[in-house]
Image (cartoon, rainbow, N blue to C red; front, side, top):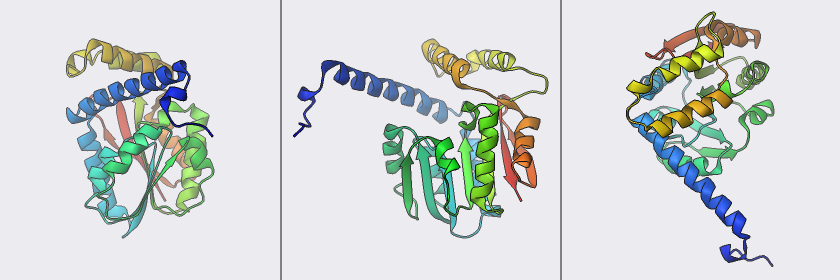
Length: 246
């Protein structure tokens, strides 16, 4: 019978687990500071999302939060809404543990699922009224984004709202120029250290694949949504919010 004591674990495994947790805590602290100082305009984006839900979502709506992370912003936005059910998907168990605490005050059943969001959407078969993705879809290649939009359209069953908040290129701009635009924001991001800002730049270089607004909108139409519109541009013009519906 295996022992649950850390003394039975190989030293490398203990160090690896501790290092991963330390890195998660460090990145989480940076992220929460960015949110608290509104550097990415979370207040405006989630305020807009709440207005959309009030105006367009049915009573007792079922909300699917794709790549939910710690769900803090979603929880704050949804706590006074007419939500009837919440499902969050994320690959990080540590983030989902935080999300569970953040979502405790929601007036509805809450379910959190650990897994790859693209795979989860490909296999989705449950009714849902609103699908929300915030700053995560851009990690997929263009075809992967298009596939997920098709899965979202199917999951909504021809009704409901699909809303995304994602990085966006200017028309004619390439990814390198978009990354360079972010680098120019350094002076306005004084709440983060040089090391933290450099870490963000490295992450973006490796994992961020923005599209133009026309491409984001076109992918939604190609997925079967009859209507697609841009509803918000971040004041620093790095990203935009798009809404798709029928």
